[in-house]
Amino acid sequence: MTDRLNVLIVASEVSPYAKTGGLADVTAALAIQLKKRGHDVRVILPYYASIRGKNLPLDSALESMCVRMGGNNEEWCKVLHMDTADDVPIYFVEHHAFFDRSGLYHDEAMHDYHDNPRRFSFLCRAALQYCMDAHFKPDIVHAHDWHTALLPAYLKVWFWDHEYLGHAASVLTVHNAAHQGVYPHSQYGYFGLGEQAFTPDRFESWGQVNILKGGIAYSDMVNTVSPGYAKEITTPHGGFGLAPYFTAKGDAFCGVLNGVDYANWCPELDATIPAKFSVKDMAGKAECKRALQKAFKLEVRDDVPIVGAIGRFVTQKGYHLVRGTIEELLWDVPMQFVILGSGDWENTSYFGMLPGRCPGRAGSYIGYSEEIAHLIEAGSDFFLMPSMFEPCGLNQLYSLRYGTLPIVHATGGLDDTVEQYDEQTGDGTGFKFHAPTPHALYNTVRWAVSTWHDRKPHMKMMMERAMQRDFSWEHAVHDYEALYQNAIQKKAEYDNYHS
Ligand code: ADP
Image (cartoon, rainbow, N blue to C red; front, side, top):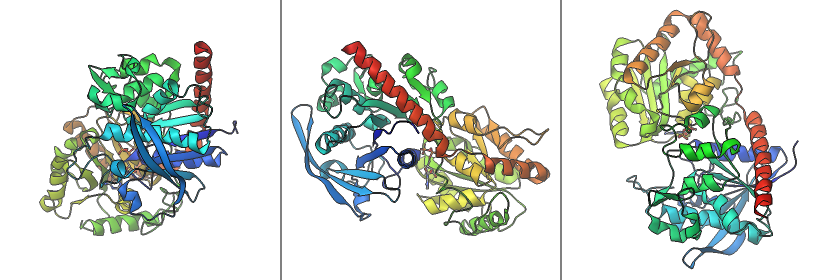
């Protein structure tokens, strides 16, 4: 193994404590894998009201901690601690005014909390304060998305010569470049970084503060979550305005494909599904299909394929393409459709009413349910992911392991991980379309369904191949170790240059 490192992971989401999407799965799994590799990894996240409700066996790590923010603001908080079953120490920052609320980022009406920049800048400063007060000397401080992107800036602006923080190298993982944390300049003073950091090459963006942009500038290494998406965000369209800043990082910017937590997502071990199965014995998959049909009040039959979908209802996920085609598909093609998701009004109302319009052929569950997610992965024949862009995507990786062939828009991590079906040879692990249009989606779903009906040997080959593809964290963690070593080297070069 490489040198044993002290790693501090700070994130707004860590599974299973707080999760709205893949970020939570990644931070949790990465921490476990780093621990297995012998590193001293510690994870810090907010003590949200939803976590308080779980009644975890917590002890107090720091009874009372003072965190100094800009504008002479002092915040007092407590740091709670527990070890996970995998022996990873998790630290929760308890600050009632900031985190004791129903949502992570927004209220029930989906309105962002107006003080999000304060909440998350405080989280960053509190995480570093914890290191100082607890005498933890991180070699790596690993930030995730805009919520913790101030960490690299704090390290370089304030703590460059601090006994505990001065030698820490910073890594910023961008899980989604569309969310940048852009706020009026009036919010900036609270961060306590000083106007010298409010320049166009750092935090300033058209007069506003762009937190992710500043984080990119100050980080020793920046990565995103697939090589394909790393390329995409250096293009004007894909980078959401940040392409020049990603490009400017040169070899301090790269893509590392996320891993999958196969302990949680694997049909041989999955305790939540009605019957387990494996590439050697697929009988259980047919049972899962029947259970899925019953659960969603579909006709119980094995002579039509089920196309499943799971995801957050936001424009990024491309469900407007499905809305434009699914009823036509269900009329034209012998198939069934199920969807699990929650989010915006358009998708919630459309998919909520779809089963009423296509009884027996379409089912939906509007809400969040890990258990139903597992059932859809296990019981479907195809998994539809029409994302407009997708930094990595986890559900297509889960689908591959469950022999549920992905039908995806060829973008970012979806393009990197799904191999196109070849009608001549039967090669491939799924079906891809290149134009993000209802027409392309219609044709590709139709192509997949007709393959299911007419080319059973090819389907069998593809399912077996898909189930044997390995996207485990064992690979990804080596890439992160290499990335951490690069960050340490970049930090040394930076220190030399500035000494
Ligand atoms: P993103 O992080 O953009 O949401 P990913 O594909 O990387 O997309 O990860 C999504 C994760 O969230 C997966 O683990 C998926 O199963 C889960 N998920 C999303 N919506 C739901 C839902 N309504 N119910 C259960 N799990 C969900």
